[in-house]
Picture 1 (cartoon, rainbow, N blue to C red):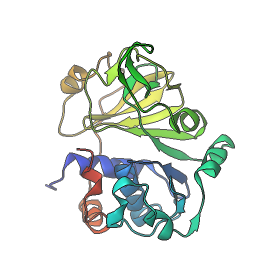
Picture 2: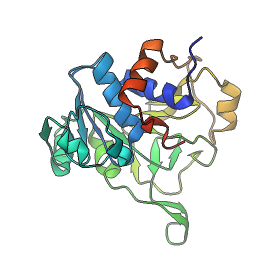
Picture 3: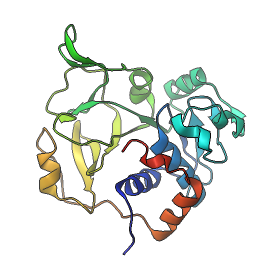
Picture 4: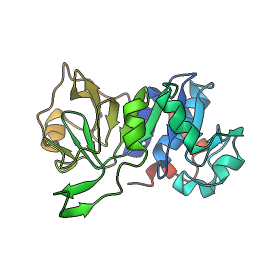
Amino acid sequence: MVNYRISDLMTCAIADMLEDGETVFHGVSSQMPMVAMHLARKLHAPNLVHLNIPGGVNPGTVKQSSYSSAGADLVEAGESYFPLDQIFDLSMRGKLDVAFLGGVQFDVNGNVNASVIGDYHKPKVRLPGGAGSAVLIPTAKKAIIWRTKHDPRTFVEKVNFVTTRGNLWKIITPLCVFVFKNGKLQLDSIHPHTTLEEVQAQTGFKLIYDEIRYTKEPTARQLQTLRQIDPYDYRSTEF
């Protein structure tokens, strides 16, 4: 029995989604994807190209100043410089394989809300807005969203506002992994520590799935490598 935390499982699951040779981007406040990209490069995807919001390419290590995943150290430790405007251009030309993006509210049709909760003109909460998501979700080959919260207010039947729609690939949460398939958000796997009933109780729409699959647990090698590459435990920052 290998002991691990949910942040470990999610980071390893994200790393497993990445393939060797892919060009992958993460933005600000993306500590978990940042660590997952390092993990993938270390274990099974040495030719993965790691891009980030300050413009660093393949930063060699996770340094203590990387708390925001947008620090200058990611450029200083990088092999070269690739600025943000070029990343948008790369994605719109169909050359960005994976983009890690955020959102606050998601519905069964794959719509993402990062703008407002409630009525747009009189919102209960005004959110950060689309920013890069509005460009990168429609244009990246695979858009992956991670959330450290899974409840009926996050996964809803219909979002309050459509910031961007479609072209999602996967959403990973502390309970499960969703995949966008045939125009709907479907259950891809549930994590080993939970049940289908719990996932349904915490989801505001009826789950769609072909069969019940379980997310692969982290291996001892993955966990050992995580401790080496992420000694400051940035993968757990959002919990």
